[in-house]
Length: 266
Image 1: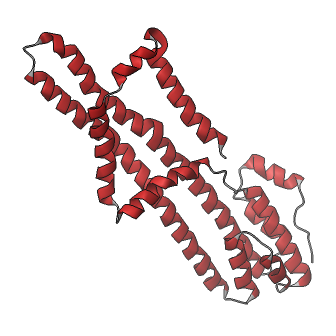
Image 2 (image 1 turned 90 degrees about the vertical axis):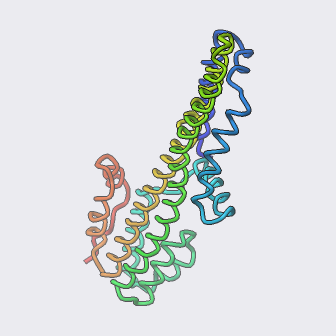
Image 3 (image 1 turned 30 degrees about the horizontal axis):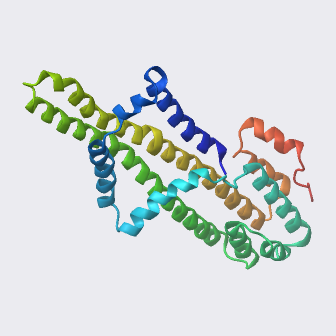
């Protein structure tokens, strides 16, 4: 489990609650709970976003994508480069056909697919086209989830403002009773609070975390594409290593240098 996501969401909730109850105790929480405000803000936001989805099952699937932020991404650029270098050394010594046995034992479906394509002697341009098409499909799926949470982040405050306007209209309709102005104003503003919480506590952090995960996964697969095509082209393992280092930040390149590099085989 990704502890950072869990701790971040929980601590944000704790700090908000603490800010509410610190002075007047937990009894103050009752002033921040209003059923009608919740129905307008959360109900309006979620139902409005449902309209933009192709079906209710798709809407539910997008909602479930929140679970992805709690999963630790099995993405390590350094390990990926080291694996490619190891494969290039094997191919250089024993030929491309030797990679088939290694491919069959791999859990990474994308790497396995690429290796089998080059072992089968597929044209390099076709290999690149197939792998990049799969990359595009992965990116589109990720963007759909990210876009869902971004849209919900925008809808929350908008529906909160609608709720506030409804509350203000009701308040002004009873302006002759000045004793009710304060309580009615407070209820009107609660919807704005709910909308802001939905956007900034849940939706925006989820969207940003999914973006980070998407970027990391796509970068790893881009490394694989370049590495596998270099292996197919018969490039020297040292050359492949230097080429793939360009994907790493300078400090991470030093980590790669400290490990086993490609063997300079003539």
